Length: 268
Image 1 (cartoon, rainbow, N blue to C red):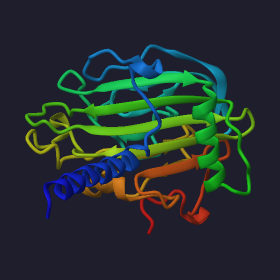
Image 2 (cartoon, rainbow, N blue to C red):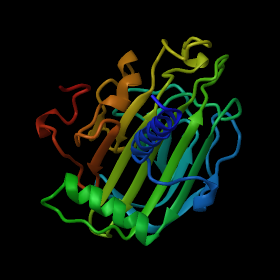
Image 3 (cartoon, helix red, strand yellow):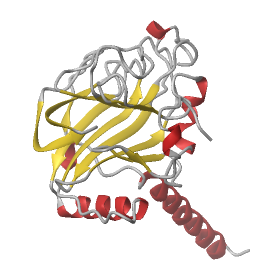
């Protein structure tokens, strides 16, 4: 094989690898300071400032005007959540919140938490297209979104370089309200204060993903929550896109799921 052919194959291989990486990364909507995101303080069990929502968000039939992006993998309404070891849903304290990945994040040791409210037409068009694809009986045109991203965040007590990257998107057209959960890279499940191993980030009481309405009755647990299997959430989905879960949350609908099983801890 000539040197020119070898060079061409190397370039072609590089292009293929880049495309594959780009396809995987496209699961997350754009985020970071260059998108105008705000960044949470570097505090263990910290939280964002109170976010006044420019468009009220309806969650399980109740409208909310404020939210918090909490470091420990939770978006809460009205009040921050600093608890680091997850409890099973439904919660006794009545706090309504979304838990993309509720675990003991420590962004002092590594990673960043970003968030922004947006009406960017390009992003809203992408979100609208995705949701309409997953819920074809209810065409959706987003007019607002809150995008929160945990970027390669470490766990409390970590002695490793492990980090988790995941994202939650709240969006609405003022009539329908949806949440998209994107999981790009999950390397740990548990912080050391939740009886996890400091070196592996595993064991103890693993992270929880799902929704708590705050009414002691309505809730949803993504399969694998608070078990070792939650580390595989990048391979699961309810919309046939590994690493993505999508829910309508004003009256709570989960596509692809038997309604009779909505409150079960696990389904196949």
